[in-house]
Length: 612
Image 1 (cartoon, one colour):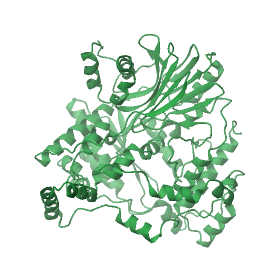
Image 2 (cartoon, rainbow, N blue to C red):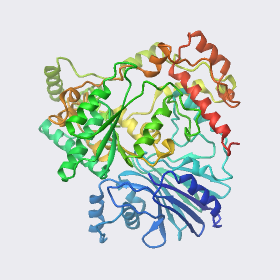
Image 3 (cartoon, rainbow, N blue to C red):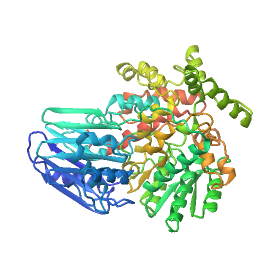
Image 4 (cartoon, rainbow, N blue to C red):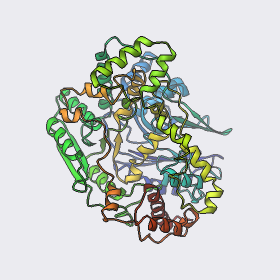
């Protein structure tokens, strides 16, 4: 994805051009197709361009329609034709090669902030109105494109790259203890406004910043709404609409040449099938290439075998990589492993090698992310809602049909086990890390924070409470950011058709039983397309945990612990961590891995030239 950054002088002074050049250098890995630096009154911008497609792109930014309002950012719109028609109905005349950036600017000129909820796709961008001296910063609903900012000493810095904001000499490099605390508790920070650094903030997904001489305001402009249920006469109608929306989501994201991360599961293979079908309908040979990670012979992993079966059926090439030779934290000491924030993935170096290899073959990769949420289904909330509405006939029909077909009632997934455990007070502190440094634990109220995190987000959807909360919260932005170009240090853009907003709104209206239980809707849509072994394969976790397998087999041990950095001791009682691991006979839990990961990351930070 293209890189962008900007500086707004709150006092109207010209920006530091040398700082802009340094920020542009920081962004160079994102955009090999051109670098542009521009200075406006009271503002400066830099942009590095990555050509992807399929829609036309603006290769030079910031761009403007009138020389007054300027756009800089990374924009990929869905539903371009719908937006074009709406603009043309209001008098706009657009050329056939109108870029996504032009569509955004035209929509902004006509409707201002009211246009933002209608912009769907993957984007983060800024709009600078030089005459009114206003800046708007916008990030899409799923958070597919990151956005960082800092307001320090009369300057407002922003970028889709954390390191670019940190280039500013007056931005502190001190860590955000709240972020680090959340990372040690659960592997990520639940506060979407924070970054790992105290002075750098993150714009939450679906939010906008408005900066003016009056001050700064942050508001939510987009979310997945609660809509009326969709009652259709025949189940086949749901399948047809779903298939059409999924095909549209793939089509909008598919350039002439693309890669796909594919396992042997139903989600990614369905995306691959849709991509191949799109090529056939356009009379173009498929340029899709699949990449699969397989853990054999570490354990009996079926992912590679099944993925290869799908690739053969759909007639596109596939490369299968063995993960079994990699050990936890292999390659972490190398300079190329440079993550902007701490990662709890001990095999990240191997993933990084794969990402960079793929980036040499393609600039866009598709994923199956998002298929598990709504399509996995929860029947208990649906049952409760129908009972409340006294729709007893619907209950009898839906549950009876499921029982006749499967020989059992649909899985309730009502969270009863978790509630029972909370009642018994069993898990409240069972997984709590005992090796936290006492002063840090007390200062940050870590035990209270742990209980708060265990409660999870508020849930509002009557049928899909869990999925709806995840989709409107920080779950997907955190997942997607870890495949952002700044993490993998390669010009490669990840796209997830299952997270298409049009598709999600449809699914949230589909009655869960039977079509959204265990992906029944997707299975029917793929009938005759995928091999039956894959199409009917039940949702199963990975056959084994690679980390635990290597620990139990003696191939890897966390002991002896690596030399601790000076700063890790502020967060972790390193001696206690050593005793806990030693008492477990060299065993290791994922919660312990987070302490080791943070130590590795702090070691890199301490070696960097800009550490303070």
